[in-house]
Length: 304
Image (cartoon, rainbow, N blue to C red; front, side):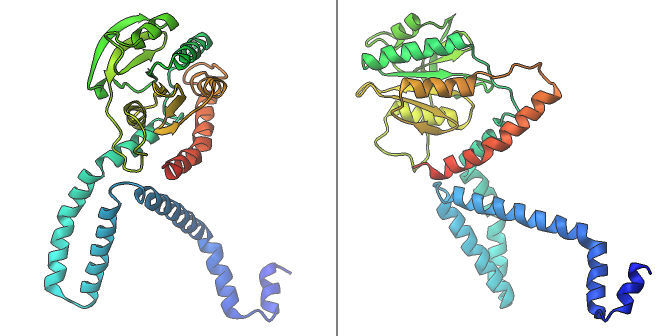
């Protein structure tokens, strides 16, 4: 006896059979709809959480208020008010793109800097040792410093002013650059690979309102340059001699040399060097991107 006959032989309600038949025909559509709703819910939630911590949140609140008012005018058939609000919305879309330009640029840059899209600039172990050594010396002598390690994203277009150099990066050279009263001690230095490319760099400061007002110019510049690039920045405080590092717009203050060294090795040195463009490397970047994405979102939301 086949299953259809067995079902008909039992006292199964007809509507239940209709539900079964509908599910068998449309289960794929239901799964797709549930996935889409889940993805949209997550995106909207994190977007609101992100926008609430930006200077543009009052604009978003005003936009939602106008949207609610527009729906009310449509329901009540208030034609004059409805026409005026629709005309305002036409200009409001352009205004939102202009107002949120820094946030949109930062978001797109963050997506582009995920490991799946770029391999970054690998640093050799000796370069990291050199950076740790010069950082220790500068911190011991309370000499302020801003060291930018450039990776895959070109940051030269973001520099307000600088002195172009082309010399091998070494402890002695970097220490002489930041020595008080030297011609190049103001600003930061850029290291690309084993070379110092620029000194006395004046970087743009972060415009985020939630950044603590007690932070100095070096720390604000470090946040600003890492918001739109994958660079790693090391800061030494002139007043206290404390060491900080900044990456992906997140500032980590008062860290020890061991923690800084572990971070640099994890971020700048590839644990396994594989040929460029291989499937295994692409899959490795995809896995790293998926593991890193929640941390980036939480970092953005938890920063103060």
